[in-house]
Amino acid sequence: MGKEFSVEEMRSLMEAVAENHIGELLYEAEGIKLRIRGEVSAPAVVPVAAPVPVAAPVAVAAAPAAEAAPVPPAPQPEEPAKAETAAVYIKSPLVGTFYAASGPDKEPYVTVGQKVQKGQTVFIVESMKVMNEIPADQSGTVTEILVENGQPVEYGQPVLRLE
Image 1 (cartoon, rainbow, N blue to C red):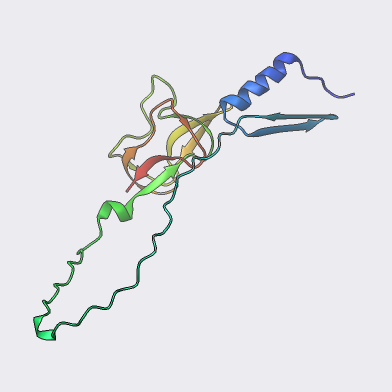
Image 2 (cartoon, rainbow, N blue to C red; image 1 turned 30 degrees about the vertical axis):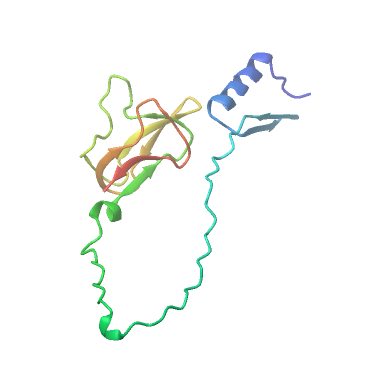
């Protein structure tokens, strides 16, 4: 027959699934099939207001053209805000724990105001006891660090803001 799992091994796998918010783990090898399903929280539902129908305009007696007051044109913005158009986010590529440095006594990889180059390691995400160094996917200046050291992160969650 195939490999047998001890209670401790199964407990360890179940804890890993729960701690890392894994929806389902499927293991098939040596004649064994093991499926562990974790709790998956439902995505938040944001209520959206239904569109309000607009009543058709009511016919009003036309006033003489000479009495109509001219409407000044709306001011046009000269240039869109720089921060809105240039911001780029470096996101977590996996679920895990965010670390700003390679160790508790080490300097953080990046700080606010620091310039980074594409490919430079900017933080670590620990997932299933593996420390994954995350590189910048483009160059820029760090304007904001959105996650606290040691905080859990989700897949696709913005971690750093670059400009």
